[in-house]
Image (cartoon, rainbow, N blue to C red):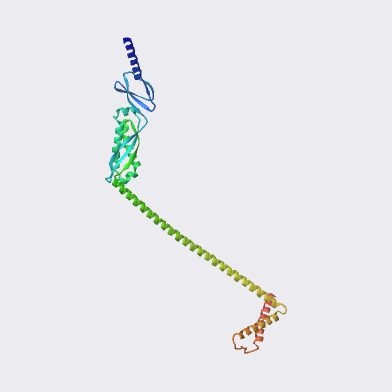
Length: 313
């Protein structure tokens, strides 16, 4: 092969390699850490960049996006000495590419291990029942602790979530029995509350019924009393009207004779009724009683009329 051709090929390769090492395109949401002769030089953001060939090199590449890292399952012991298996997931974000490159060798491993140790510590402070109720508290404490420790590494811990809490089978059975007993207790309480409320409703209904009956009886008595009062008033008015009519008739011409005749008729009628009450015939001791009685009545009526006439004059 011709030496000139070999040199041309070699030069072309050199140029290609030089261009490849000189031009760098950084994708969006990424940062490249550049070293010059083995020493940190600068951090490249997204865009096109020119490097010095053979002097500058891309030492580290970091994504600035949020990263979800799985935290492996581990066994923790609660405050009441119950072993539970817990796994979770932690969300990280690189905020300082230089610190993430030189602050720690592997920030993924470091943050997950720190999250596990913090989780074991927090679980050891609470009882088993509380582990299910205070997940948010546990998550917040893990985030606070790991974020503070990861700050020198250029890592921001955004959140941590407990995925699953698995107690031993024996504890699970005991919890199920406890929950079943609690549900049965609530059912009994609910039933008794329902029966109590039903009895209260019945008694309230009976009470209201008695009140309604008494109110009805009261209104009935009031209506009857008002009716009787109206009846008595009407009878009294009718009687008074009749008496006034009789008095007016007596004052007319021949009125006294009519009254005399009427009294005599009533006396004879009543005496006849008295005689029919038994087989013995009753005869007045003084047959002149009829005339005397009539005279007495007429005399009284005459005195009343004169008194009235005097009063009117």
